[in-house]
Image (cartoon, rainbow, N blue to C red; front, side):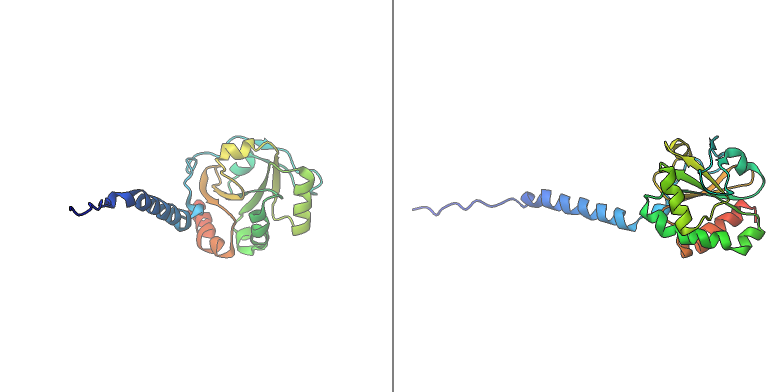
Length: 193
């Protein structure tokens, strides 16, 4: 009588599981290790796009925003925001603090807002409730100007040199530490200091 033949299983049967685990691990590393604020922009070093946006109706003493406002010799900070954007609400107190910052005022830095794909009444309510940190607010209901700036989503903040050249792009909500360690140094660079 012969002994039964036991089929040996190939170690290759684990290959799909190993590949899946490697891909999942790589995905998780890229998801959590990346810094979204470091997404590069093809527009850095290039002129800001041409635009002329109307003012937000009801926002007293705050005119609209155009490309010409970015070419007046001072550094501009342009914040793209929307009332429906939770991170925009999160960063709003930081923008208010920047607007009150005496050092920025002394340097002539202007802070502008671009209302992105928002209902005017909602944007107005947002700025009236939390305060208006902007010297100018342009209304971009279709998002065309934001697209021309290369915006991925809101909020995004741009530092613009006095000649209208885009110097820096920050993606995501500003925090006090991001302003201190990233945005203020970029403003200084844009001023040529």
